[in-house]
Image (cartoon, rainbow, N blue to C red; front, side):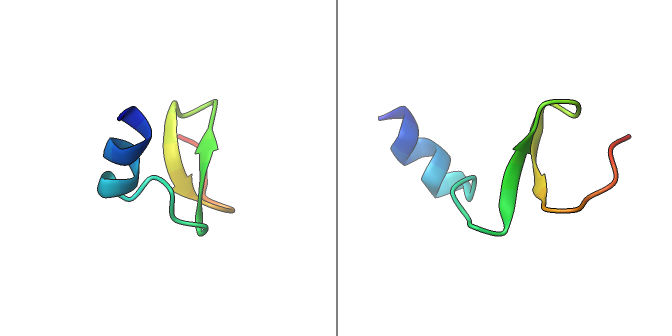
Amino acid sequence: MIRTLLTALGYEQPTLHYCVSCGGHYPIGHFCQ
């Protein structure tokens, strides 16, 4: 259920990855705040 929700929100897009420092999903190569 949770995975489906994340997919619906677009968190499963291959162009995004989870950034531990930012605590969220961002495009690969993004600049951490």
